[in-house]
Image 1: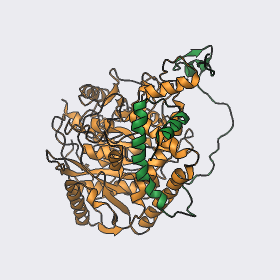
Image 2: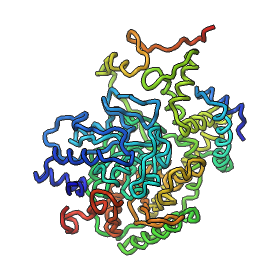
Image 3: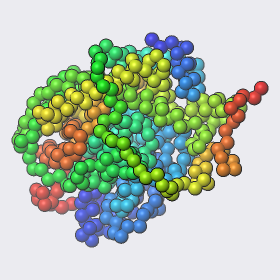
Image 4: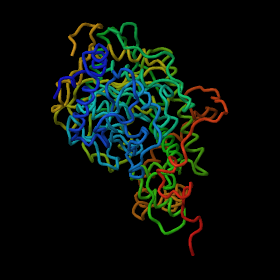
Length: 497
Length: 96
């Protein structure tokens, strides 16, 4: 396999700009790598190249794997659901359009939990994605395909969506970087809706520099999404060398008992690394964060039950054969088209919004959301960042949690509060830890959350910490050793790839 | 606890056909999840403003002028049963 695959997307970009790397050949090499997918990570690949391509004067951006939740004109877009099997949208999402306009080809569409509902990718109608580090384990979800392609060497980088942790958790479980930007930073137009007040697009990359580059392409206000505002300033590449003068707060109410021992050890070790880099560690209180899961599993299903009403077998997608009236057609189409988790959430959301229960569930959850956001505001008045493990465990086994929906939901314990508050959070690899049940060591993520629209500060700190951690492992069988070259030339002076 | 009748009622509201087995399983699973969620019911949040949207936004206006949109043929191309410029559906009234 060509060693250009060892380049990070930023390194490839710089080589293309300098004229040392041919964009067409580079993209073709990646299409060849993507074709070797044994992880069920792609639902569709652009085998010939040029899907939806927009002629740009000088293409110099690495091809991107796109979660199959982004409408792309003429390209199958299923959101991991049977109900959208064969659907080819007549328009392109703003996020994908911005990639194409930047000259980044779409490499393929990645597998995902159906309508982004899940934390393991086992809810895809097209079968689970396998974790490239251990094919008997899940890659996380819902952007599991987007994480697996980057970790497994099937794409240089990818985009996903995060509603309650769906970028950060799979990034953690696959040993890569995942950024959920501030709500509103990137347009949601053409991004199939799950829970509209929480859904946010973001990058999954080998390192923090790539995340900054991709965020810069994606972000911006969009007239097609009235909730999009963009970032106050275009992100620049991070260049912070240390963490001096920065204060990192650990929630005192962090449920340490719920964290796997190996994950806990690496979390503590990363706190020590922060101190070594000159950062200060303190305890803060987020008294309402423990209610995040409860509030989230009311609000997200409630919004989903409304958003998914559109799948009725009339305008697009599948329609079930039914001899009865139109209502029976709706019921049969949705019964056949939706998987078990989507049905569960539609039921949960419909129940929470139904007459007599609205105030007790939906109204109360929205108030909890206010309190969680206020907890973060209070913490950020004293500290620069709030840090937690991204996930309480390393990647778990396929099928291990599918019988217990509540246990699956509790995976999102550390990522949901930031989503409810709408603030940006990044997961970076902290190292490898042994699973609770023993076995080869697997990736662990470290989550850093920042105030709304403080992406630049977040990326700068994450970059400095990334250098301090020095994580440079990759799954065996990946077409290169190590996930990426972390330290950029010009910043510290490591040799170029 | 969520009873079988409640599951059937909610499924009707959601236009979701469920098998008998799904109804049974859903009753148990929803009870379990709501049992966890019920912990927030005990919080005293009187007077707290509910949050429906996290970013402070003023009304976002656009000029009320015609703009390019999908051609009818394109809009109908993905429909299961398009007919004469329209989406055809089964009769709203069940046949006798």
